Each structure stands twice: as C-alpha cells, then as structure tokens.
Image (tube, rainbow, N blue to C red; front, side, top):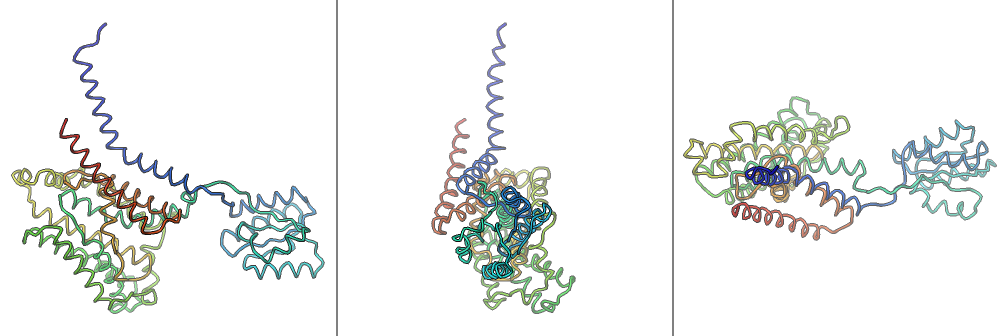
Amino acid sequence: MQPDEDFLPFMQTHSDSLLRRLFSDYGMVLVLLLLILVVSILTLEPQNLTGREAGAATADQILAAYGQQAVVAIAVPAGAADRQYLEGVKARIEQAGGRIAGAVSGTPAQARQMLQRAAQSGVAINALAVTGKSQEWTVLDSVRQDGQIRFFVPQVRWWPNFLKAGNLLGVANQTAIYAIIAVGMTMVIILREIDLSVGSIVALSSVTVAGYLRYFAGGSSAGAGALTIACLLALLVSAAAGAVNGVLLTVARLPSFIVTLAMMLVARGLAQRLSNQESIGDVWLPPAFRTLGGGSLAGLPNPVWIMIVLYPAAHFMMSRTAFGRKLYAIGGNPEAARLCGIRLQQMKFLVFTLSGALAGLGGLLLSSRLNCGDPKYGDMYELEVIAAVVVGGTSLMGGEGRMLGTLIGAFIIAVIRNGMNLLGIESSSQNIVLGAVLAGAVLADQLKRRWQSTR
C-alpha cells in the first residue's frame, strides 16, 4: 500500500518544526551541560578524601597493617573537615582495641610537641595518621626519614575541582545576583531597549541600606523594624532611579542608551556622595543584616532561594499574562502594538521601574552577603547581565526571549568564569573570552534571523 502523497510532506514539515522547537527549548541546556562537562574534565585532579568517613578508611588501613598492636598518633590541620577526619580515625582505632598515643588538629609546631611528649613517655608509635596537607609539614621530615613510624594518608580519588560541593554552591550564590538583575534586563531588551544603569543602581542600593542603618537606625544595634525600613528604602530608591529612566525615555523621548548611560553616571555619583566615597563596614551594621544575603536554608544560600522563586514567577508573567504578551507585541512590532491599543509608553515606564527595583534587590543581597555597603559595588555588572541575557537567547532586535534562557545564560557565563578561575587564567584573558562569547551569541542571533527570513 503506497503512502498518501500529502502525508509525507506533512510529516517532513512536522518533523522539521519539532526539531526546531526542541533545539530552541533545550539547545541552551545542552550547551550548558556540555560546558560543565568540559570544565569538569579540565579541572580533574587527584583529591584526598576528607571528613569522618575518610578517617575511618585510614584507620582501617592502619588496622590491616598492625591490628590491635597499632599505636597511633594523628596530626592534621585545624579545619573543620580535618577535625572530623581526626575523630573518624580515633573512633575506629579505639573501637578495634588499638591505642591513640596523641592527636592534634592545629599547627606543625603542635604536632612536633605531641611527638616529643610521646617519645619522652617511652610510647613507641608505629603509625601516624595525616592528611594530604599535614603530611607535607617539614617538622615531620625527621620522623619520615627515621622510618620507624609509618605514615598513613586518606585514600586518593580523581574528582573535578569544579564539581566540589563548595565550588558549586559558590557558583550558584554568585550567579543568583546577576540572574535576579537579568530578569529586569530581559524585559528591557525584549522591548528593543537597553539599560546601562543597573550596575550603578546596585551600588546606590548598597550605600542606601548601609547608610540608613549607620546614620539613622543606630548602626550595629539596629532592630528588626529599622532593618526592614532600610531594605524597603533601598528598593524604593532603586525603583525611583528606574522610574526616572522610564520618564526620560517616554516623556522626553530620549534613546534608552543615552538615558541609562546618564543614570549610570548619576547613580554612581550619588552612591559616592552618600558614602563619602568610603565603604560602610560591618562594624556599623547589625548582625541580622547579613542573614538576607549571607544566610542559607536547607543548605542553599538565600539568594539562590530568591532566584528559584523569582524565575518561575517571571516566566509565568511573561508567558501567561496580558502584561507579558504586550511586552512581546511591543518588541516584535511597536507600531502594530500601538494600533492594537497597547500603551507603549506606559509599558516602557513600568519595565524600566521594575528593572531598577530588581537591580536594587541585587545590590541589597550583595551588600548583605558581604556585610558592607560600598559605592564600588556593581562595577561592570551591566555588561555581565546583558551578556547573560543575550547568551540566553534574547534577541537585541526585540520581541524574542525567555526567562529560562536568561537563567541558563547566566549560568553559562558563571561556569566559564569559574572554570577560568580554577585553571588560573588571568583576568585580562578572561575578559577576552567573555567578550568573544558575547559577540558569538549576537552573531548566532543574527544568523538565525537571516535563516528564518529566507524560509
């Protein structure tokens, strides 16, 4: 039986459409996963196991060699994981009937004193449990050369430095602030506009909250009420800066590039004047202030939780509400949107006000995390945020872009930068790479548009 002649073209068209949609929806996710794989391979190094389990495994090696005749000393640095390692060795040795002749979690000098005391007491140590760092202490060289005491270190495994839990949390925490600011920038670029003032608004927000706490709320003794007022004031000032951008854009009909460039200078100058060009350090800020940006919940930093809540809300607003549909309509064809009754100037004013408020939220979180207000915060943030939005697939021509893409773009930029830091690449070379990535993203958008126009 021959297939219907009309069915084959339909299937071909449907297949092409499905592939384009899949690539559009998941292409950036695949790029991010591929990038993570590459960075992980490049940062793969031998790692000494740490913590209590590593201590227990080291103790098992000692017991396999000496059994209950094991007389063990433990010398490790003063870190939390090292102390857990010490406890793991000690518990397993004592449980098996061995003897702990001494245990130190501290400095090389303390380790030398421990071994000297054991020698003076006539204790014949036959095993010394150390970590990857403490085994390199020069005070232990004489013990190693003597050969009477055998060194035992944690097992070594190959693992990427990039995929260490602490590094991943750091990447997520750093990305969260850029990603929060990028929500507003995405809406601005969808409107065919640009906002160069977000970095300076970050600094203005930081100085506002810290300055209010220092000069008007009692400094380090400020209570919860004053802290709330300070945070709201910082957001209000930031939203006002964005609103000024919106007024100049819609009423004076100035180009957004010029308007936000002027606000970038004004906001930075205000931040410097308000702070007298000095940072407002933690000595002037209440301990509770650090909780907002420096605290964590269920192991995740608070800025990451805010990002997790914000992006689904922003996605819903852009894809399921009239507000979002109007933004896409204006960005796609402003004249057609105007003829359909959409108030272009009102929408632009709201978007720029929202962009300022989100930049203020980013500055608030940054100031809280670092427990300091500083007029230098936010320097070059506008370029990082624009790069994240463009790399995430939002077109500079307007009318096209999604919040999920922006989030992925922010993580792509963060993974590239973090990977280069781990590989020891200098900052000037990092800027070259990030500039090339941004140019490549814009070029890809142009090529895609040309390809679509020819179909």
